[in-house]
Every structure is written in C-alpha cells, then in structure tokens.
Length: 436
Image (cartoon, rainbow, N blue to C red; front, side):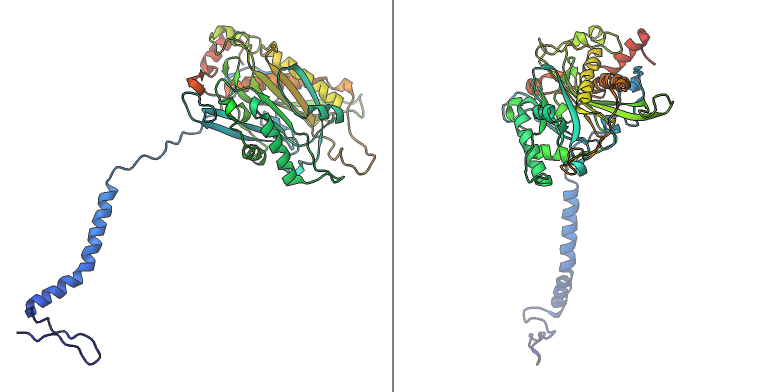
C-alpha cells in the first residue's frame, strides 16, 4: 500500500497518494484534475458556438436615402436664373432647420397618433446673429390662418428672431418655445428688457396627423432652430410640411431662388449692375386637384382624383432677399407671392389661410439703439421690377418642388395621399410641348 499523505515541515501536502487510492489511480486523478480547467474552457466555447447558431432577429431595416428629384429635373421650363442651391438659403446668412415627427399607424387615437407633423425654422441671419433684427413686411391674401407676431412686424418694420412653421394646433407651444429659446440664448435687449413677439405660422395637417394630440413640444422647436443650416436643404414631407397636402397630392415644404441683376442705383445711365438673391420657402397645403396648373398646363384635370370634399388647407410663403429694401418695399414684395401662387392654380379659397412674409438681410444692426441716428442703404421703387419678377418665379417653382420632391404618405385612419406622379407629369409636359 502506498503511504498515506502527510504534511511537510513547511505545512504543504506531500506528494503521497491518499490511503484509499493506489498509486496508479492517484496519478490518473492528478492528470484529470489538471485537465479540468481545459475541459471547462472547451465546454464554454462549445456553448458559445451553439448560441451563435441560434436564430438572431434581423436588424431594423434601414431604407436607402431617397433620391432628390426636383421640378427642374423633370424638364419643367421655369423662367429665371436660380442660385447655386435653388433655395431660400441662396440668400447669404439664411439658415433653415427641421424637426420631423412620424410615428404610429392605423386608427386615430387622440394623444397617441398616428403622428405626421413637425417644425420648420427659418433664421434670417443664422444662429450667430439671432438678435440682429431684419427689415420685414407682411401680407395676408386670405386670413383664414395664423401668423403670430405680425402686428409688431407691421408696426415696427422689423422681424426679430426666427420664423417658425408648424401645424395649426401647435402654434401656441411653438411660439412659447421660440421665446424660451431666445431668452435662454440671447438675454435682454440693450435697454435691459427680455421679451419677444415670436413669428409662428401654421397650416392644418389633420387629414394625416393627430392634430388634436399636441405632439409638438418645446424640444422639437429648439431642435429645429439649433439644427438650422445654410446650403442645400430638404423638401417635401419634412419639418412643418410633414403632414401637408397640396392640390390633393402630397404637399409640404418647397423652396426655390432667383439671382437678380439690378441696375446700379448711383449711376442710372451706366451699364453697371449689382446682383441680388431672392429666395422663397413655402409650406404648401392648399388647393383642389382640378386647379393644379404647371407652366400653364391644367395638370390636375388630367390626373383625376380627390382627397377631401372641400379645401381645408392653407399656404405660408416666406420670401428672403439681400437687396436693401425697406419695410414698405418688402410688403410689396410679399404681395407678389400671390401671383406666383396663382400661376399654380390657386384661387385662395375661403378656407385657405394664405399668409406671406418677406425680409431683407441687408442693413445689419439697423435696429441697434446706438448710435441714435444712422445711415442705411435702400433702392428706389422704380428699380424693383426684377425683384417682383423673381419673387413670382421662385414662389411658383417652390410650390411645384414641394409636390415633386415628395412621396406617398399614409396617416391617421389609414388616410392615404399620393404624390404627384412624375412619369405621368413628364408625359403630359412632352405631349403639350411644355418641357425643356
């Protein structure tokens, strides 16, 4: 029999096997005891391999970015010369930001959804110069709508802060949110007063959106302001235009611009010209299908269909320019948006809130309290015709862009609104010799 285990002088166990084991079995035991950690590792690896073979839920489907297709891409022969981006952001300093809210489907549950709405923010001088007002003018073609803050625009001649666009029942929260944002980021004015009469406008998106659910919150307004940028901007079902319908096709946000050579004011007899930009952004939610007209062609009558029994929409039109215009001249510019709207077929029906505002980014610091007397640039009325023309042209194209750069949408109670069919539109334009 092998000797029984014993302790060595330093307290460690000796190498002798236990009394109940033979020497052979003891050595076998030691061998397997040494292999135990390795076996444990192998078992764990096997378990990981098996779990890796279990079905794994597919990751959420990520849709490829939608290709931007604008009205000019379809060969529509618009007049005038657009700017680099053919957008309101061709006016230097202007920035645009969006918050788009899309969630839920099926039957309407007020307060829950479906949600198809959002916020658009237009910053005349960008975030860095938010507290530098711009000269502005306001015009109402049909007043069945809301644009807050315009009484002070009319009285003072200045637009202070951003222009925000949203749905009809979110005007209040958006107005309060703009004021809160400005107070948090701007502080009091030169005289120590912290106040704001925010300009917030609306169109009704209740055919697709849970408009009574009040889904727009202050954070959404703040995000639209803080995400504003210059350069190319998105169109269609985005921002405040998300749930809008135009000529009973899917409508929403559209933009366009024109570059305008204006004769030099100083020397009327010279051939010198100066170039200004006119940019337009629309939130298009107006018109009946048979009214839709594109470059004089009655497109709506040739693509029959309907969404609702009577017009329940509106349109907000924002015009920006860097031409040095005074408030009364900007009001004249805002009126001309009516003619661009009319080119697309609208008659500005009783139920349509057609509200327009124009501003100029020229004359920075014109509203500063000091010095008390200052000089400003302006231009004579008899040189404004090119700016009027540019406003009409850009307004027309912005509305058509809102229709073309878009997609079908299904909203509350499974209401579906189809986009203007591009191929059919191109066919009609070619058939009637209206394409480039």
